[in-house]
Length: 536
Ligand code: GLN
Image (cartoon, rainbow, N blue to C red; front, side, top):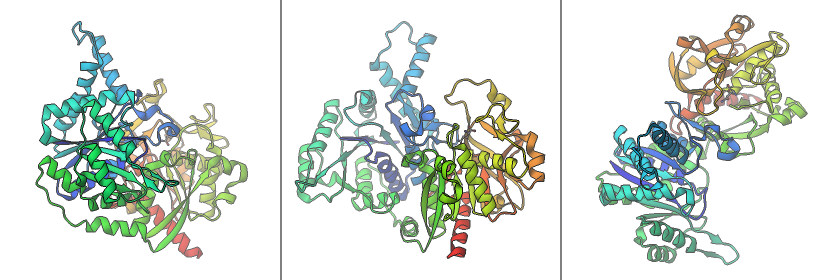
């Protein structure tokens, strides 16, 4: 296996994850099998316990790991299927080490950053290699070069590189080349200093990917080359993309990055035209139609909080040749102003996942509005629970129906905890997590959209549809379209008398791809578009 390590310099939020993912796309286009991983220097064992305001979305893999959102980019940009091995935090490293220490595995030795922490990190890199049949592992190191907490990871990749030899490892440094407007100049000094910092640690990057808002002139490239010790052709320009993140692979390809990577690593792999990717981009960027949907949530102010969701909506838009304007509606605004004020103009209403009490009644009002006004509705996880509560309250007249998450003593707990969840007090990694099978009932929207009877989708929640109310709700018209038979859990609900009212307990957004939109998102946007066309 060959290893590409991607580090970041100068500032965070440079899009290292997207750059790593895009390199994955380009290497796959050369017929190589890739896998990707991210190492994060923070001390949480995983991001699962962090608020979306802290760290954006928590991305869930098939095997139920709660991971950094960059793993979402990796899976969307490539065909790799990632697992809990592919995301490592300092917290996890230390947790493992302390567990070993308590067991007495270190046989009386002093446990130290060097060698024990470093070795733990190196072991993980090797393990990813052993468990994968990929040709190339692209590994991103979170944080910014120079951060104290990132040092062990950099030391680990330095040592690892010595161990596996120069032909097998490549260091790519993603850095900022700022444009100073008042001076009208592009500045290379931050990049020089960031590379100097890396060299101090013992790492000489072979390729520099320079994030910039202005093109790099040959002189600027020459200067960076000279003072950062890399050939001029390895100074890569990565401008802000105009329309879509899926343009990044094309931009990097223009700069020959994949060619350089293959040359450095001695990989004989040849590029093919990227016709399919280009077609997909065209549908994304120049769609024929337009539709407007509301996402009614709690973390709507933060772009990263529903990362995969927004991406899945874009994929579904492209699949329907439609631009999708996403209107972010704060559920608390609906509580204050009523649903009509915010939702009247919408072609579709989506209630995504979420936790905690805030805004719940506003979401219930949104689901009611969608049901009564026949606006296409798509509920995901909490969005399904909300729809069930609304249906119980307003159609079945179960007064005060609720989820026990929001009201422990509700007279009608239509959503509640399973027995196995009731005794759990730890918050980290204890939800129903990861991929589980689901059977789709014949004749339902879901079955038609998936065009399959058995599907597998990823979960991240504690509460479930309460089967005690199943008969009462289905008699009143709610259809159980998806079912996890083995555990007797409701996974998809629908309202057949409605143009499109579909909600699922799992998180389909984690499995949508730009070139293969998720069926439930595709169906929802299709319904929204139909409504948009009928009203114009
Ligand atoms: N809070 C709900 C639960 O834990 C929904 C979770 C979610 O939407 N991811 O079941």
